[in-house]
Image (cartoon, rainbow, N blue to C red):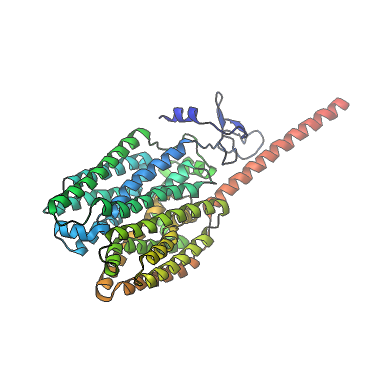
Length: 503
């Protein structure tokens, strides 16, 4: 659908003001942002000019489509690790090798994030979406060709392609939210983007143990693995086709004054290197980069090693290990949406981030203390509490980063956050895995608790400088001043006419 068609199909609320956008067209606004004029001239009355803003219904299609292909990609992150004992048997490799099927997602992100965020700034959302879905689709079909015990290197190549696609996906939720959504719904939109990623992980925990049972016959096992890979490839192919025909770069009219200001910066005045330098000099943001990495790195380690931790205490419970992982992520998705809506209503970024971080630490302590009690139902409950806060933290970090770094690119700030998460994820996964092998699961989980405590203390030290929120408030104040000036001018004119007629 073209931008012109999108404009024609949009049905704005009737109670919003209508502003003249050009000589032949009037721009109506959907509810969610204050009405702002497009071509209000400052020459006639000395008031400040403001651009029109508009919300399109298509924005929901864009964010949900992104969520779906993010789901397809994140599902494959945990696809091997949640049934690691089955894949070690099929491909005749050790546990640490299968752990790398998840850690390759983290490792690939680190060297490629900077060129990908540069490409996002230069080419925009649509190009990034096309590359991401094409790579993800290619990786799934390579895996289809790898279902033989001597072809582990082929399945690893397919996983590498999918991990490369992830680099084009993880940093996009906050960018899509800023480009398409109004100031009162950006956090909710970002949460929906993160929701898709987390739902994919949830399905990755649930589906592989069901589709691939732990059987001894290698031919039967290959058959089950092949079915799983074919389903994944079919879904990825369909999503690639949808992105080609549906995904749109950006709305014709920006949704907020902050986004209008960002668009008005000439391309020749933007420097990617200068943007990176500004972010690295931003002390509150750099503190957030470290704390985000600590929290999400712990989540990556728990997800990657979950099967090993559960099997140690509950042998033969591969399916329940997947269900526990599903519980973690489903609870986290609920937490993400609640946190997103809460931020849009309250704008209490630091307070909410700190509270959720502290509760993530509490959840990790309770999970570590109860894992070995011998009651699976207890593990389900404590894992759900852990997931609610630890996964619910993800959109908070994205949105807090955008607030601290405006008007720098959302893709660049999100990329640095995710890069930190991948680095800590690799370190924590390797270290916790070794600690579990040598000292048991309790010691491994205490290891993570220590770093969550450090992250909580560092989060409390972040200075809350909400730059994007301030920019939108200033724009609204300017609009109010302009409106008051118009009202005063009209009142004066009427008064003069009445005086003249009386004379």
